[in-house]
Image (cartoon, rainbow, N blue to C red; front, top):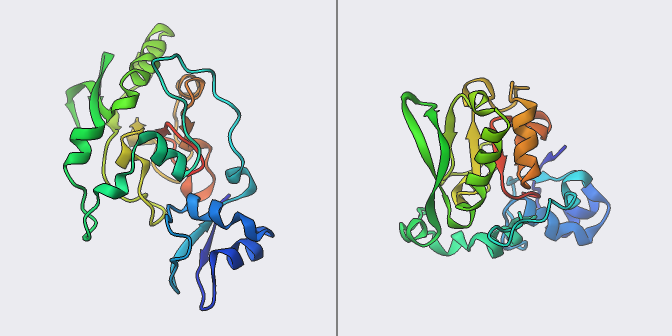
Length: 230
C-alpha cells in the first residue's frame, strides 16, 4: 500500500526514490503518482505518497475497447495525454477556467434513472463526464441493466467535480470527469463498504479501476475511475 513520506531538508525525489524504493530512477513514477508535474519542485514538510510496487506496475490489459471508445490510461502523464491538460486551465489562485467544461465535458445518457445521493427525490438520467467517456458509460450501464443489476445501483454520488483527492494534495480524477461514485451512503472512504461484486465486475470488465481494492485509508468502495496508477 502507499506509504506517506514527509520531505526533509536536502531531499530530492531521486534521493527519496532511492531510499524508499531502492531505485533512484523511479523518481518520475513517484512524481506521476503524486501529481507532481515538475519533479524538481518539492518543499520541506511536503507530504508525498510512496507507491507500492503493485501501484507502480501497469495493470493487466483491459479488454479491447471498441473503436468508438478509448483505453484507460496509466499514470498522470497518460491521463493528461488522453483526457487533456487540465493544469493549463488553472489560474494562479488554483481555480478552474470554465472553458475546461465547455472544451472537455459532455453528458452521457444512461438507460435507467438512479436516485441522486444527496437528494433521492431527484432521478439522474445522464452523467456529466469527460466527452471521451460519453460512449463508455452508457455501455457500462447497459451491461448492468442487461444483467438485471439496476436495483443494486441505489444512488449516484457524482462524476465531474473539480477538487483535490481526499487523501493527498493531488487533483482528484473527478476533476477530469473520468470517475464516478455510486452508493456513497454505505461505501465511505476507509470502509469495506457493500458494493455488489457483480457491479464491480462489470465496471472492471470495461477497464475501470475500483477504489474498493485500494488498501488502508485510501480504500474507496464507492469510487470507479477510468484510469490507473494515479
